[in-house]
Amino acid sequence: MASKTIRWSKRITTSQVVKLLRAERDIQKAILIFDSATSEYSNGFRHDDKTFGLMISRLVTANQFKSAEELICKMKEENCNISEDIFLSICRGYGRVHRPLESMRVFHKMKEFNCHPTLKSFITVLDILVEENQLKVALKFYRYMRESGISPTVTSFNILIKALCKNIGTLDSALKIFHEMSTKGYDPDVYTYGTLINGLCKFGKIADAKLLFEEMERKGCSPSIFTYTSLITGLCKSENLNNAIQLFEQMVGKGIEPNVFTYSSLMDGLCKSKQSSQAVNLLNFMIRKGQNPNMITYSTLINGLCKEGKVEEASEILDRMKLQGLKPDAGLYGKIINGLCSKERFVEAANFLDEMALGKISPNRLTWSLHVRTCNAVIEGLTIHGDSNLAFRHYLSMQSKGISVTYNCFSVLMKSFCNQGDLQKAGRIFEDMMVDGCVPDEEIWGLLVTKFVERGELSDDIQSLLGLNV
Image 1 (tube, rainbow, N blue to C red):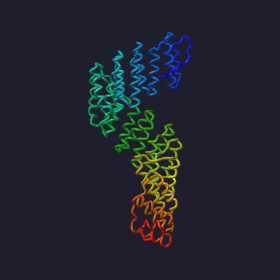
Image 2 (image 1 turned 180 degrees about the vertical axis):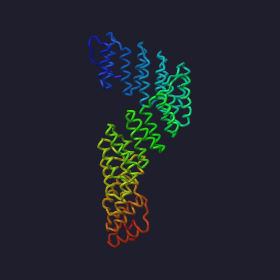
Image 3 (image 1 turned 135 degrees about the vertical axis):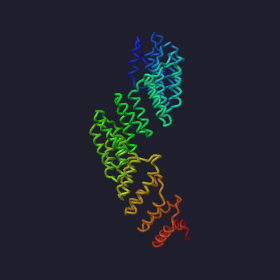
Image 4 (image 1 turned 90 degrees about the horizontal axis):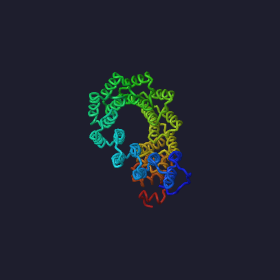
């Protein structure tokens, strides 16, 4: 903690310290305020559970967990009341930064501070473990909860079902617990049904999900937007588009507003059924309803349009995406560029490569190989269709960026410049080929030697490279 102090009034109060701590956004300055107030102990002020709790909360928000835990120890030394909520704020903080086992460690420390965890604490930690996919640990923790005398609730059953729905091997166990809930006097709620329906759809058990959805409605448990979206997504993935559309219309008819995930799932189903134009219509409907598309929405549409050869429409969607302030990645550009290449519109494809360079859009590890193939295809296409100078510019750009040039691309460029009589560029490409370990075939060797000999421009370096006697 900071060692500096600030000036205080003669009579410092808890409410004054709390007010200052809440008003100060900078965590280091908040620490300074807290420490300065501590130095006023000789004047009668003492931190209590309110100031300690607020400072711990601020430290957790700033991910300063060690300092937060040290303050709990300080609270114990000063005989302050340490509430369950103070411990849970640290548990949730560790969960937020994906450190679930630390959450469980802090939970087990509660008893050391004479703070006995209630159902609230057990539920909080159990949910953190499940969210972070610590499923084996979560199931052990659930057993420990029961052994500790904590009775189950609908909430704890829901979290347990969520854990079991994460793997296809435990899905039957989730269903078993669901069916046992009613016999034990616990009525499944909308979250219970939604979790199970989502799990069933994720693993392709669409028929079971539909039956559960119908049961849910019969029992008067109104499906949430999450439930509808899960089933619509599952129906689309199982190529049951008509049922997905009907369910979508049913949802809208009941006054339940679809969210961006609902729209994106249905667009994906339309695109996979080669109905990308209808997917674009759905996009327009979505925007009129005040919903902003996200990256997934745009990616789905661009991919679907390109697969159907509708490159102009895909380019328009890309422009709309940029106008919304979203930045397309290399994968999306690659789909449009490949679509243009398939239509032999190589100059436009090259323009998109330039746009990527200007926007500093680079492929990642997953899209790198696609980008390499795309760049080579553009250069080959430009060369074959008569724009070899533009092809050469992009070739030099590829070389400067360390993008591999294929043998076929080298070969096409070499033949083009040799036939044009541009031996300077032909020689440059030949040397690059050799450096990259690409051995030219007999046709290229013969063509290159012939053109240099005809022009009498066979330099000593090139002759040496070709293995000719100088």
